[in-house]
Every structure is written in C-alpha cells, then in structure tokens.
Image (cartoon, rainbow over all chains, first blue to last red; front, side, top):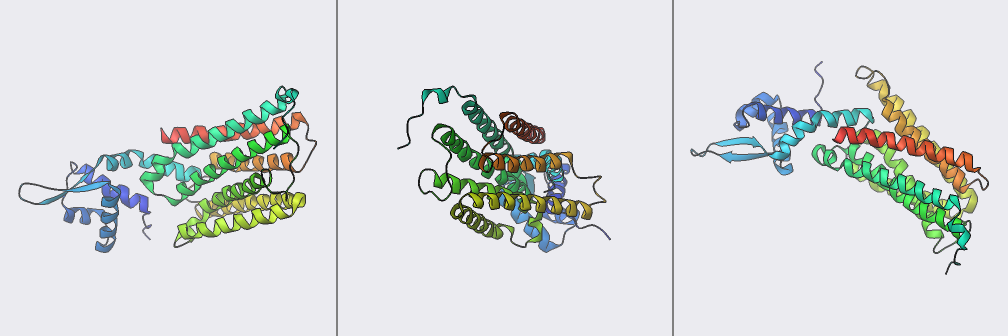
Length: 91
Length: 229
C-alpha cells in the first residue's frame, strides 16, 4: 500500500514542483503533478496562499501563474531541518 | 515587608550559585524557545509548537523558582499554604512546571486528537487543579506534586517507546537527543525534590545535580542551534 503523505511533505512537494518549473506554473499542471485530489489540492492551495508561501501572478494575456514567495523558498530550504527536528525529538 | 538581608548573606556562595544556575537555565530555555520560532512558523507543526511551549513554561517556572530561592536564602524557607508574596510564586511554580510537563507529553500525542489546540485548555485546567491541590496541602502537597511530575515523566517515556515501536521501520532507535531531553526533565524533578522536600542536601550533591541539569539543557540547545542555523 502506498503510504499517505504527511502534511509537511505535501507542502514540500507542491513548492518543489513550482520551483522546479522555473518558479512559474499554471494551476492545472500543478494540480496534476502534485498527485492530490482536487479538493485536497484546493485546501493546500488556499493554505499556501494564506501563509504567504506562494502567490498568483498574471501575464500580459491575463493568464494565471503560481510562483513562490521568499517564504516559500525558505520553507524548501528548511524542510529537511524541520523533519530532522521532528524526528530527533519524537514530535 | 521582608527583613533586610544581613550583609553576610550576599557573600554566601549558595546565594550566587542559585542566581547563576537560574540565569543559565532561563537563558538557555529562552534561546531554545526563540531559536525555534522560524521553524515553528514555517511548518505550523503542532509538535514543534508544543515543544517550544514546554521550554517557555519551563523558563517562567525557573524564573519564579530563582526568585523563591533567593527569598529562601535571604529571608527563610517559605511554606505552602501561606498567602501573599511567598504563596503566589509557589503556586505559579507548580502551575508552570506542570504545564511544561503536560506540554512535553502532549508534544508526543497531539496527533491522536482531531482538534489538538482545543485540548490545551484541558491541560491548563489540570495544571491549575494540581497547583491548587499542592498549594493547600502544604509540605505533603509538594511531595504529591513531585510524584505527579514523576508519573508524567514516566508516561512521557512510555509514550515515546510506544511511538518508537510504531515507527520501528523508520528509525533505528530513540534519538539520543530525545533521551537527553527526557533526562533533563528527570534532573529537574530531582532538583525540585532537593529544593523543596529535603532541607539538608549537601552542597556537593546539589552542585552535581545543577551541573548535570545545565549540561543536559545545553546539549539540547546546541542541537536546536544546529537545526535552526
């Protein structure tokens, strides 16, 4: 059975997908690559916007793109440390 | 108004040892608390949040304990059940240190609850009841309080081992830092007992407990600094 991803891991995966796509991706491919149901994706998407990890920008043709904020990059940078912390102190 | 301390008390080594010890513990605990602010904010992980709170409550408890120790040295041994200047810090020490222990346990089991933050109110209520109970029962109250802390610590160890057994595939053993973390709380209980229950603890034994507590806490702090660098 495939292990259910933890919340922190899902956030990491979503942010990583955005970063690996030159920090600019449309919502539909992001949903596809993130391997989540539409409902879950929408919940995470909303949470990431609220926390200031991602933001929506529009190009000249008014197309929506998602990019990482500084906070989002910081999360990616600190992710392994956060996991180490949780693991080391049994949290 | 408390009597003015005789000048010889200020040159008493135990006076300065108490101040120095309390300061180290408070500063170290606060470093742990503030150093983990960013990871707590980024991750919004409840376990990290409760871990931090453990140290915040711990530092408050130690601040009060330091004040009380000074009072003990300068004025005399305080008694439980007495109201006012002495009674209130004793009540708060029990309250905050129980909160520290409850948060320590809660940081291990929060995932079992659907709305973890709502349970926190129950923790405050339990700590309040224990503090009241200890406060009205005078000296035997503190013995019961120390026993409750010991039970909470044993519970934390049992939960850790249980959690470790569930995650056996993932880990090789309990993290050495977690063991240090638990040992630190054990030294805190011994310390409490030495301070409040036994009137004639030798300077050597007291000093040994202090040094062990400081070393264990500093080891936790170094790990936290490494993680949050």
